[in-house]
Length: 518
Image 1 (tube, one colour):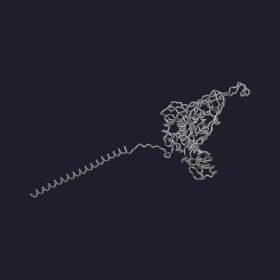
Image 2 (cartoon, helix red, strand yellow):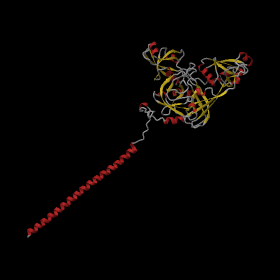
Image 3 (cartoon, one colour):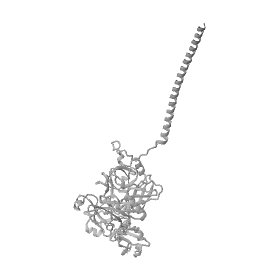
Image 4 (cartoon, one colour):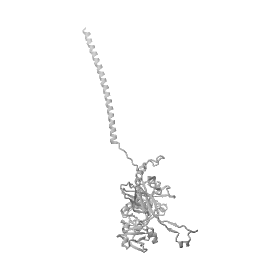
């Protein structure tokens, strides 16, 4: 009986133990499951928080707006039929420059010759002319109008254009892009580069910044902005097809031709307008076209900004251009010249002659030398050499790299002015001390002269010291006929010693005067 009870107790304890183990095992499994769930939830939370943190850091600290400016044409993809500009956005340059390009309208008087109607058959009879006068009689001057373009280069109203746009004009009107109109004052001109500087009384005007024309590359995109055929605010695009091009169109004393050649469409009325690069910077002033018809036929030419900027600076500061001279006669080296002079390369600019009192002679440069660089800038044509010298003023020192007997030599020379000195030439009219005005047709007819400038007012200066009186009409200076202030300036620029002034007074008394010039 006892054993039976003992067995029962053992069985009970065993059952209890088994139950306890089962419960413990189940509890352990639950704990493990719970831990796994917790780990999963914790991992998900960490992942979500980490993701948001990474996004926040990347957005606020790592990612920055990128502004990309393409400065090198090599970075641009080739043009396609749907994108002829080769991937370059020209809208910024066009919209910015068109606001600073103006329409210039000029007026001038043109003397007309008109044949009288003959009342007899077979007009032009010399006996009829003897009794009844010349059948070709002077008529009253007819007012002529012309137009062109100009570029605002400063907010206070300075405008650059071509000399031929405003030459001989009596009235110059400026029309802005927003149709405001102003009368312009002529500050000065330089026929040798075909550049003129005007000024209008206005403030806060849109203007174009100067660019570096020396950095232009062949194939680089440019825009021509102007007013062809009186079509205001016209923009055309093209590429630089050549540099330092001389085409023989500029006259006057010591002309400088080193044009930028482009295939941007330019027509009559574009003269004086802007040539800008893709950044909207001014790299040239559109001046001429190569055409047999008078209209655009493939090529146009612009004065480089490097020359324009120097001319403008001189006109503003001195009233006239300070021309620097090296004192040499030059030729572009070609195959024939290289063979003739036994040169080892077809390269550089050959010095055919050296002025005895010039800068080159003083520095030791000789006839037969070949200039290959100016201030480390290579020159291979006469136009390129003229452009580099044309950027300087008298008194500037430059480095001239030459080849002599096929060996390179470096010379440092001080450029001279047109009178052989190294100083700045003072304003010619200031030196003369006179207010001059072009004579009208009535005076011309009365005195039987074709040209002349009348002295309206005299102050202290060369003319008064020479004994000239007010009312004197200057017809010739150093034997050259003069009909404008610019004519006199051009003569005085190259006058080295004495100046001969010829003319007459209103009563017909002829006179001449001589004075020295410093």
